[in-house]
Image 1 (cartoon, rainbow, N blue to C red):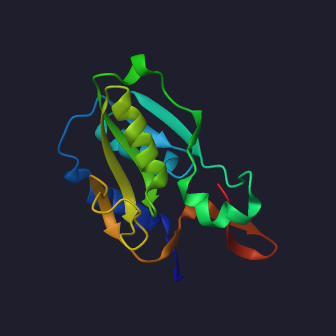
Image 2 (image 1 turned 45 degrees about the vertical axis):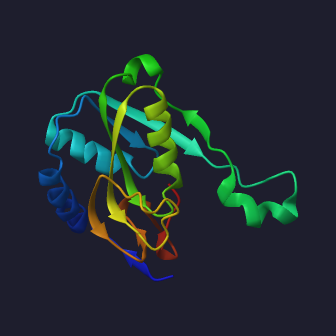
Length: 169
């Protein structure tokens, strides 16, 4: 898969492209860890959204049958490490922010759980990859760019003696 390293200047341009699209007033912004923390913070600041929430979601990769793990790894249920209580989100318009919609599993898990808590979620990402999307025809409510590349954001860069390498959030 093609890899593309994004600079801070390019992130600023993506945020600038998103802001005019965000045509609603949101009651809160929910950042998905860890990729949504920085773009979510930038959008919250630009839009003057003061209620900031976080969600942390994991998809367990190990299953009871290791031989079946590869075949079924995309079908595992999400595990929510952190999620706002229903009384915080019910009845509110929530802007859900992540860095990228690849397969769409994480952001759709968050969107679905918010909907189940009587919230009104709107999804927002810097990059949308329709080629990897498992939820077509669903797509982000708002996105700054379409890509077919694996995106490496500046906050994912690991610096060290080996030089600049994609890091882990």
